[in-house]
Length: 215
Image (cartoon, rainbow, N blue to C red):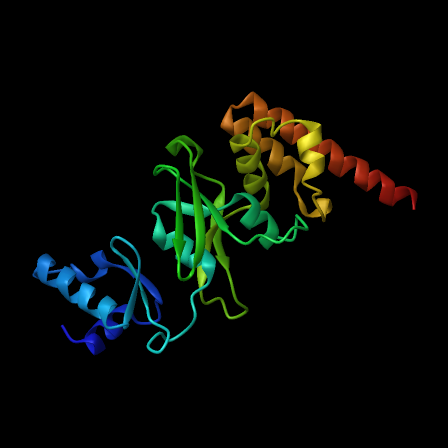
């Protein structure tokens, strides 16, 4: 396979898995050897075993960290602080892209950024959607809905349902959270910890709404 053929197969994808090239009657050993040669020559960047990025001189567009996160570990979706920051719900800058996955907990440092994955059971793998990352809709990535991102964070943090922890998050734009959805998601999980947290956040939303009504 020529490199131009690879670029034709990859198309607009700046990040891809080697499985994309193993369709049909191909030699997997030969494909692996060719990928290694392209990495050595600087045409590809190896992000982890079986996951590659087209090197900057050859890629058609720059990858967004969220789409890289989706491909680096599958299945996964961006959540926790990264999703909350994306929605403008927390004030702190987030320098590592955080996701949840049914795969094992792992962390990956790559030339395209640092990525953290937290394990959840398959029964908790819901509450996400495809989100446009640019104004033209290209690319998009699987990202937790705001309410699920908050519940994922609560679920994975010790003491995450405490009022102290929830207030330390300094959640901004509380009015953008749908309290009814938050509670419904928490009840769907069946986790008392999440139900407690959802009701506490719902009360925070209601308290803030009351403050606005008195202005």
